[in-house]
Image 1 (tube, one colour):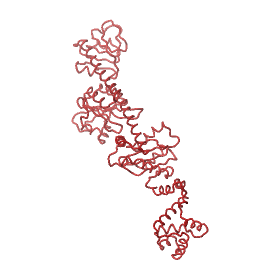
Image 2 (cartoon, one colour):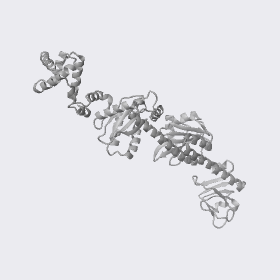
Image 3 (spheres, one colour):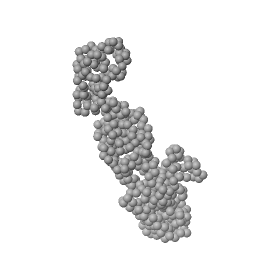
Image 4 (tube, helix red, strand yellow):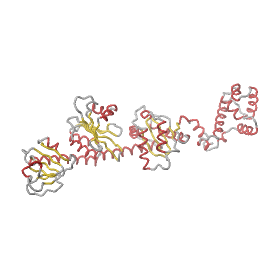
Length: 499
């Protein structure tokens, strides 16, 4: 109120509570009874010198009050007495009308479109300065300068520059719980003072975004802080509406791609934007065990904590696991740090699987299945990448629903029977011989026997198998069966189950 009046009248004094909410004003005349919570306009000649002082929430006094007596209020504005009370009263009502229209326009936008850009456009005219809204990761959401969107590209670039941002934090001065000012003169290399105001848009202590007010046309004052707080309330509602709607669409697209459904280009683009993905960025899918104690309410906390360790990611609970899609190019994906987070946040008994890198989000289903497979092979409290267990996965799935022994050729069954009664391990002999490419000398050396001894074993082995060992398909079949046989005594869960 004092700022708007000062544009037309000369103020002598402004004191009291700067954040006081004011009701519509009343004009005081001698003898009328004032409500204790009113905003009263009074001429100094009407102020009682003796007796009980006038009491109100705020006085706007025309002329100096006599020695500070006669008025009792938390706030006081004193205007030079040469103005008529009617003239000042009309201006006060006009100020109320302008702010009321601004407030009503914000309500209308929130109800119909919820457009943050529209809110900033009408508000930047009230501030007569530049407004910029950024999201929780400091990306520009909307910008407006005195009613025009997208103006001031140089200021925008400076605002999101990370090195400059760190310097700005050093000159931060908090003026309320969520609002602070920053002197940008040295940071931006300016000749004159450039104090900007920032308001954190919070929802239950979770940062949704930040509203910046830049003094592109005039310096900022306490009045800007008061209006900024009011604008922040509307932006929170609009941003929550937009944020939740966008988050819902991202989650729906994410879950759809995980389940193998097709998605529109717009939805895939939205999912990519949520991960800050550029064309050539490599993505990774991570599947993490969720312990039984992790409830739906804790999942929100879990997600926020995870994104602190691995940013540029989206996550959801899918098929009983915590499934994360992360931009590995932007985040780096440090396995040691991730393992530390798993142990600290989820405790013992947790394991994780990571699929291969990919760029096309339409391939997410394939790489999710890779992550599930790697997760199954991971030991407790360990992280396994699919690249480390491709062969194990192939072996665990090559039998389908049949036992591994169904794939063994008849000759291998006979060799197994021979092995049970012989002092010679013919299965091990066959495995080493195949690994050495049927080279007799190298095989004998690995088995620590003389060459003639090995040749004797070989003759009996071939006679028992009854297979043309020179046939590549036959050799592959034997090698595969020997691996399946070895896996039957392995501790790897998938292989034990299938074999």
